[in-house]
Amino acid sequence: MALSDPQTITIATVAQTLNLIETQGLSSTYRTSDGVWELKISHQTVLKNRTRRLVRLNKYFLDSLGAQQFFSFYVNIEEPSGNVATDTAIKDGIAGFITWFTSTIQDKILGDQH
Image (cartoon, rainbow, N blue to C red; front, side):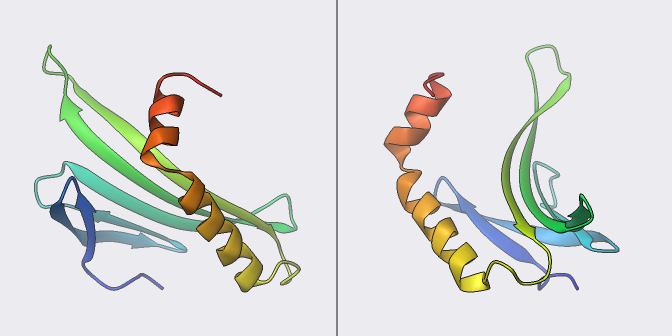
């Protein structure tokens, strides 16, 4: 089941409205009307006993030669099937990650630190 349509993401203080453009099985794609931002959400079973939940945000742009390029940001939640890990434990991990992923950490990672 798709999330509500549309989805909104605020980027650099500007709200970006992403409309649902495709739903296929356990996957949905949302896109801004200008095609610059795209949000993909999918769920799949991997290795028979694991579930992968992927949220991907793409930004499309033209390079200096006019060729289309993009960058992506992913959030991947992979968990054992069968409710072995509780939703609360997973959400607590996500909250901790978001707290850690500050602007300072992002600058360090974009500067090739690891």
